[in-house]
Image (tube, rainbow, N blue to C red; front, top):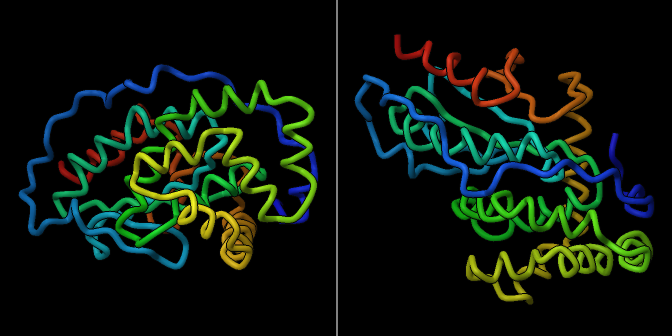
Length: 238
């Protein structure tokens, strides 16, 4: 389990490089069911994460993801768009993103994307994860001095050092956040504690050991990428 005290430990091994961030979702036909509401614009914060779509949907898809996970980034770049554009608007499928925190960089990224009102989450999430190759590449090349700044000092100083060294400030500035606004989120220890506690509790309760992990409601799916997940979603429209 990840704990805030682990922020003083060295960064976990860097994830592998991914396909270009311009990768698009695989082609898919629109589900036959007609939309029953503007579900694609309905975003809400839940007890465990953020949900887009009909909260009473028949298919309640949950993804446990980590921002330092290369497979999670690849899924976001290949399948997440299709879920939000093709399936969620029908009202039959909702999509919820929850955090499974792996390391201090992951936690800093989670604090950044959660900054602001709940309806900003998915756009923030996309902005950061579509730049995964760039900022994880910077993490791979971090100097010993940079990693020391990430691992020693106060919690706020460590989070700010990670955000500065990996370009999180620039990414979020393009989303309309000032440095002061982002700092207020990055240095929120109570929020960080709550994120880590939820992550650890869910990992224990559900036996989560890797990311991405997909659930339909509380049932774990035998799917770990868009290629294997898409048939599961399509089954709700047959």
